[in-house]
Image (cartoon, rainbow, N blue to C red):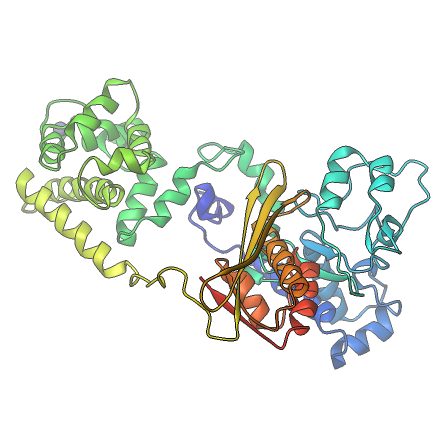
Length: 488
Ligand SMILES: [Zn+2]
């Protein structure tokens, strides 16, 4: 197997080994990111003076005779450019047509061609009087898809400067891990599409499923090999012109391919029967599918279909069963002592429940229900919904006093919204404005969104797509005598 194939990410059917070249580029991108994130550092000051005096690192070019450091950083910038995104503040620093500033879009850029438009900076699209998007101008200038995406970018009512964020992490902060995956995909994705075995342009959900299973790594590896058709059962070996009889070593009644070994062999059948899964497997085998396909089908069955079986972790049990059957067969070939079907079934159940119990995180306690705020305080509850297809949402807010009495409430539509977090942040902004209008002084704010609560507890600093909304929320919150943010 070629080395690059070993490096295919796990969610795309690979083993997820690290490609050193891509990893180095990701590390260099981190160096470049530091220069942007920390422009006043000594290193940034020196390099800026020499290589990008206008302060625009992303537009800097390689120079002849440049130092090794600078050449390395230039390599990192190339990777960084594959994933950076501008967060719009006042829009003065962002070029409408050339820069990456559009969330919810693969290229992060405008798709409308520039044509003869004179507009150049994003600030040209903002109405200076209201600090809102100039909707009419945007709809006149841009294709509808761009218009919708632009209008869903929040603007701050306060003067916020544009800044660069990383678009492949939720919080907008650069991570080597995500830069590595961006770089890897850039380098190898097209090869992956044309190579056999893993040649799918849309990642098959089975590859994610395998590595998520709560079972030992040895089990996952065998499942992975089975699904790739590289488990050395007799038929596979015979096909590779090895001198073996293709018949099953366990029952000697039939050719031993994956389907036979895992599902059709008399011993396998008996094991599945004792596990209570013979009916579902029987049905799957009726359709003329290969063993790999049946295993994939079983592991991807929806939860409700699996729950009828009466066990808690049926997927894990299926995987462990496949591994167990393979292991028993291996022992037989090596002339070691093997178990009977009953012992195997018991072993599978024990292994499944032991591993699941050991690896499941402790159940987290959720605080129950709504409770009244202390005397003198008003409680604000905010919530939002988000429609991913329409990029729209709804939001609501309720104010109640220390006896739980309703003071005010309201809800509204969100016409332009990029993601769930933004919807929740807009709901918070909506609620805070309402509380302000009602003349509240001391406020306890409840949101069911942990990220909103944590961001506000840390002073509203955000580098995510909703940065401008948090900025506003922070300013509003400062107007109250007391505000306390709680997760509910
Ligand atoms: Zn057999």
